Length: 182
Image (cartoon, rainbow, N blue to C red; front, top):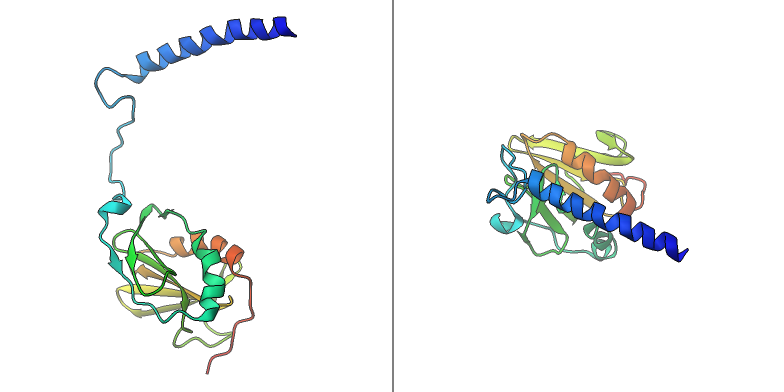
């Protein structure tokens, strides 16, 4: 057994050294970018380069305190190619990505105009009420969770960020029968 280990080491070490030399020769460490690929096009700005975004939120409720931390802890640092950014709000349950911003707020009020069983869109098992009343922003609000979760998108952005977040929402917040509106 010891002989096999010695033979393996004797063969493996020269192979690793040869690969390291090959990578340095072919990778181009001759003063260029250190072997890092140069990509054309724009990259999203880093989180620290985006200004802090003020976000209006409703007062935090006991229901939000009970449900929202589970969702907030699963949110991605990047969403649909947009980097997360810092927010300023009266609630710890606000999060944003990109510029113009995609904004998520957990624990919002029932959306005005929502009536249970009517005007809901289902994506990956999560029911959404969509408000397109503002020409600049589309507001998506969950209606089948213990708390309402709202995602505001610039009108120029399709539903991809909402679709991407449904997995985290469905896993963090259990289904609840939609509550009828007034």
